[in-house]
Image (cartoon, rainbow, N blue to C red; front, top):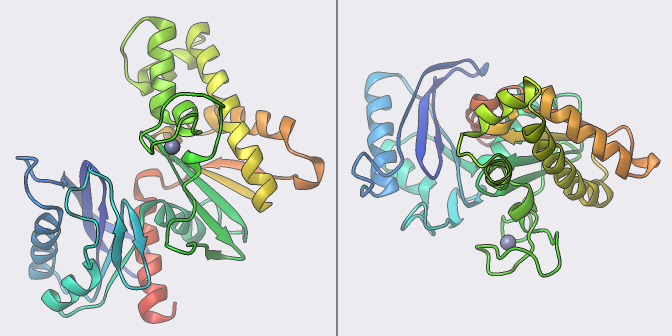
Length: 300
Ligand SMILES: [Zn+2]
């Protein structure tokens, strides 16, 4: 049995997994505790301690937000949503404490690994994953292996250039892809166009029921997304794009729209390029973390 954790900016999902990928007792806690003050690693240590006390755990597999040196299990960089997390040698800290093998990999990389292992990307060697949320995270798989880049920071698709003189981005530049095509950007457009303040799932429900204002905003967003994918397709020539993040819950309703615009924009020699939503949605990160762990520690 393995302990599996997914460390996100707001919640940590954790539980147990068997080597075949079946997940058990999956729960969530706030990353910084109920008081929003607890250091990330204190929460993580507490959860691991509880799991290892109650179960015969032979390893700890972690998916984490931030730029992650997955070889050494260290956080290269994390934003302010995870205070004091940058530089943390997670793997060695937990191995010293618990005396079992520990692995750490970036969460979008884990989404892609999870879908490669048990999901929609199984039959594909060259795959990109775009994870939509506040921003747009990305992962790159080339010839069945993740591509990490020179400083474990490859795949920041959200900061591709999208609009000259465009909207200011938290990265310090302006006109970045994620300012137009993230889930948050879509939500903001929907709120503006419908003069209301509902959540994304409600807007999607309205669109599916035929509400034209919502449909128009979602179509425009899908078109923006396809412009980013067009650049990525011509740079990487993948056979599949996996759509991750909360928006993956919308399934073919959203992937078919993106597929339509992608097909109308990429050159014929790059087809077929399949656009699909992550099949494991909430569990893909945990599955991917486990797959990464098994590969790193058991030459899986
Ligand atoms: Zn940016």
